[in-house]
Image 1 (cartoon, rainbow, N blue to C red):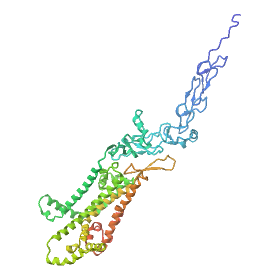
Image 2 (cartoon, rainbow, N blue to C red):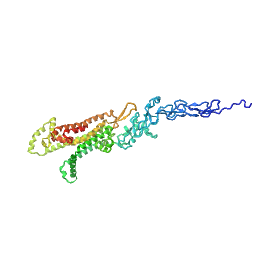
Image 3 (spheres, rainbow, N blue to C red):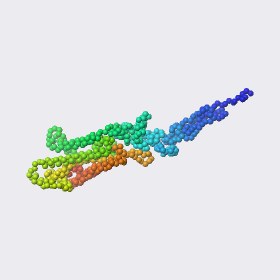
Image 4 (tube, helix red, strand yellow):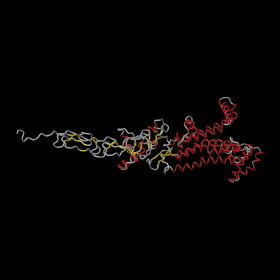
Length: 557
């Protein structure tokens, strides 16, 4: 009877991660996908979606990145299908894995799951795509830039006259350090395309300076622009110096007696005479004309057409080509210091002014000589022969008559025409012819480079702004002034001005060459030397008579 009425001994409670049914002395481990977080449980609880557990677990573990558990009670997480991924504890895969980016953030996660390759695209070249990257959050490395956060096209920032690191200095990319709070604040205030620029820079490829009246130097430094008055003074001074230097050289060369003088002047003039004889005898003029024309065409391949000859042909001639281009605007008129319209005016008007000044000098010298002759004492026979001419000069002459007389004087051998028989307006026309050879040479030297500057009004650099898979959309900026977007109201006045200068330079030079050669047709056919044929010999001297017009065709090319 001992023990009657005492309770039967209870089985020990189930351990963590185990369960035991009521009245059972045997505890069992929780199956995969379930857990027992406390002791003494009669059954295990199922793991929530996004978690999993192994056998005998007292807790569920979140699924690792790149895996998911869509249902409760999963014993292990499932790896996301390519190219999807998930965050920690994911119940589905709706983000793109490393090396891929999500094309659109507005798409439904279920759609991403059903068609992952349509929404997750391979990371663009040169970009970096960590897990859960979208098109807007592409990591742009240092030295690269993109025009829009909706574009997958990255542009490597060029050096623009600097070393290989200049592009990296300007284009900071979107790889931000955690402590770079100042740049983070700046990025929130700028346009999407400027957020990839280092402080102090903005615009396409970060090539513009934020500070007013500053311009890019050495590809990575912003410096103050020169005052406009200083620039104008330098240009005027340079033109005047060239003009005076050429005038002094021509005047000294015309002094025949100086060649017999001892000393440096006589030696230099005699050396120049020998050089001229050698130059003419070897026929260097057509060779230099071909060389100059070739290189002036080559150098615009890069600036105007974004193309260039193979490096094997241009590596050793780039500096020479830059000198031959006669494009001095980059030194005196940097892009940000003066609008492109003003620079275009300077580039086109300056050489035209130099040529006009040269021709006016010829007219002035002729008129001056005429006045000197008028003041000189005359013999009785000279006074008698000039009576008829005096009546003609005192009368009012029509424009047609003046032109006819000028043409007749041009087509005659001037040495056979009496100086007293030439009216003042014919003297002016002959003054033009005196300096016509130099003017034609200057036109030949300037026309290609000036024309290239004019046509750069339409030279634009395009950057893609449309997402992949959609119709191509681009934004274009002028290569010579990156602050101007092509095709906008700001760009239209520039192209209108360029059209005017096309008439003045490319078309005007071609028309001038053609008219002058046409006027020389009859004298050249008759093999008669006239003032006009002598003045225009630069155009036809190197060609056989049948093809005297070839220089105009060469200019058109």
